[in-house]
Image (cartoon, rainbow, N blue to C red; front, side):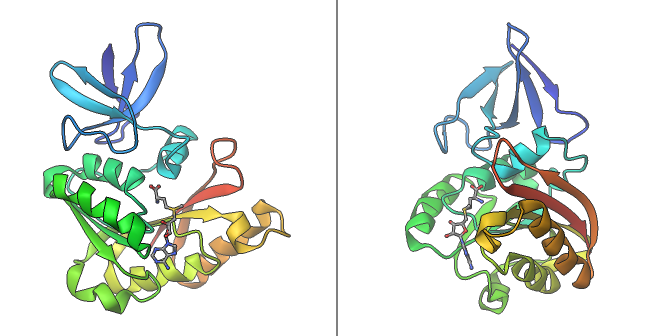
Length: 227
Ligand SMILES: C[S@@+](CC[C@H](N)C(=O)[O-])C[C@H]1O[C@@H](n2cnc3c(N)ncnc32)[C@H](O)[C@@H]1O
């Protein structure tokens, strides 16, 4: 087994298997612990977690060609819609001990799992709250480099914009995972993606990239914007 950086992305790796196949991975911030049943691979005494693109929209966007990943070692990230922590745990791996991921989730059931995960990861903070009301958790969250949003709500572009206004540094990035069917199942996904980008532009963001996640995630896209 061999390990190489994945493109020029800091904190993201390619594991190269003896048969020549490759899978993306992150360095496990909590060695010995799995989060969602992913494989752990040790190469030269460093443990990596395979990052499954079929389970994580951020991984799907990366393997589908996202050119810039604004989440790097040391980043502070506000993560909206953290669920039980699948993708946030890989964010935690990437940002490492100098970074912090503030994980907002409004389902008590998912947050319970998230709390157990955060106990093993000192760079993750669980916040049980509704992402529509950033003022509720204002006292818990610093200024961040990136706001990531995966809440599958009709007003998700507004939700990310309101959080960015409150917490994002000037020149920071937003990553918005769009689930077209959560917004309007009667319209073509491509129409919904354009509408959501227009909302972000109207809120003052520059759209840098839009990645259709099909077939890894049907009717989903990832939008990268800059404030
Ligand atoms: C698709 S799941 C997120 C999966 C997660 N991002 C990952 O990749 O591991 C969407 C999550 O957003 C949460 N959610 C939806 N609306 C929300 C809101 N207004 N505030 C906080 N969480 C919300 C849901 O409870 C659900 O857990």
